Length: 360
Ligand code: IPM
Ligand code: MG
Image (tube, rainbow, N blue to C red):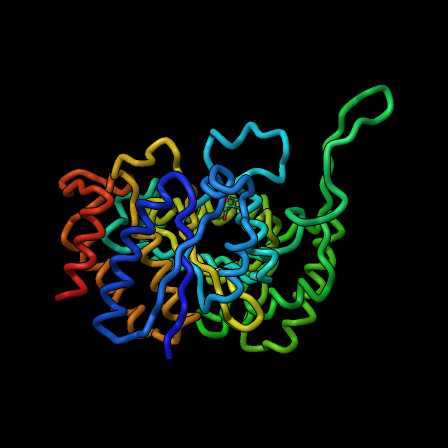
């Protein structure tokens, strides 16, 4: 039975990195007779330019119909000045996450041993690093109402957002995290700001309640400021981290950098049935777009996660991950992970190398 994969290249470096991931997917599709069929649609700034909105109805329909979605990145300075917040590229991404109910965001931060020297931290602090950040993706302050910019007394403008989670939203992401921890090192650290924010007092309570069902998983709690510090001080103390939308956004960028480059980090965003959208954790990097400098590995690894979680092809995912490790063994590096003695390659040369490794 064929499966439909929707490709959303997006903006900036999005199209370049997605091109390389698509080449990898085309190859394994043929090699392993996966029966994947691909369609492409617009999102973000490129959709604004073509259709006036960041998430055209045709894209949303295609996303709903697809078995899985692979996204590049959205955003760029040319769209940042639009005073209408609804016509920003990021709204396309947030819209697809929320319309598809992709609440469970898995962001693994794994240090490839070959890249220990590319990390800004000492090799002994990061070697062997293997963390999973589970970020709630469709709630919290990103989506809370009311929100906006209003004029208060005296003509003073005031910006406001609402940080809100109900217990069902917390429980649902908590279960994803406990289940993930159960499959891994059996340690879960829930990150909150329960010393200040009531919404996270409830978050902590629900995590405690859930832990009764997962007695094999050791639950701990940490305030987000401390978690940021601990991530750069002693990151290997963590196994799985679970947190809300905004804290997860921030901590996952920090965790990404531990691995040498944010250009290495894939992610999965899953709904209640395991259908998902897969994207690199990095953004659209408009400053290097179109120059062949971007690292396609996070997107290639996102394609691997897609095969594993949504397309029932875990062995093919293993093969792709092994191929990525192999190209790193060959000392090939894009600029973001370049270090002395290594061979600098372009986006497409990195793609070539992964394809060659898969061909064996
Ligand atoms: C991410 C990004 C997005 C987010 C932006 C582009 C809206 O930073 O996926 O981490 O904040 O969620
Ligand atoms: Mg982010």
